[in-house]
Image (cartoon, rainbow, N blue to C red; front, side):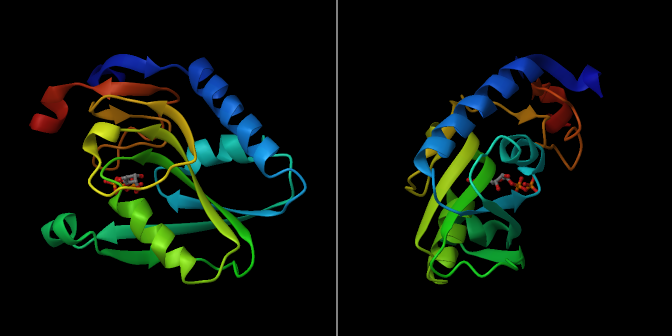
Length: 179
Ligand code: PRP
């Protein structure tokens, strides 16, 4: 598996520092409130697990998943919700947690959807942001690190469902995704 990695972009230690900084900001912002933390599957699950255990306010946990309808989706931004919330978020503060924001399609669709459920607020926390790829304008309140348009894997992020279990984030060798 490691032979497919060109270089390490974020080590385990760097990821832990980033997560710690994000948790500090979130803890300060939500002090005294209860938050429904919603992980967007699958990529966020490792980051979410590390972030979640550093949160100090009362928290509920839920998950969502959405997938695109092929090429049409890229232009319309319309997604299929494959896993919906189980929590009732009406009147509650929601924190959406993602591994990466790329075009912004996924989060803008999910945020719009959640807003129809009458929450008090919906904010977004992402480990990585690729602003150069953005197609949908979306406010992201908590960003771990901005990155270039690189193909990264590990710490939950995949290529063709592999490499999620690498404990660090690495740049995938082009011959892997070009073949
Ligand atoms: C990734 C990532 C985000 C989305 C971001 O998910 O986890 O959900 O893409 O891209 P966007 O901003 O262009 O919408 P992916 O579809 O790869 O699924 P996964 O999380 O199950 O790996």
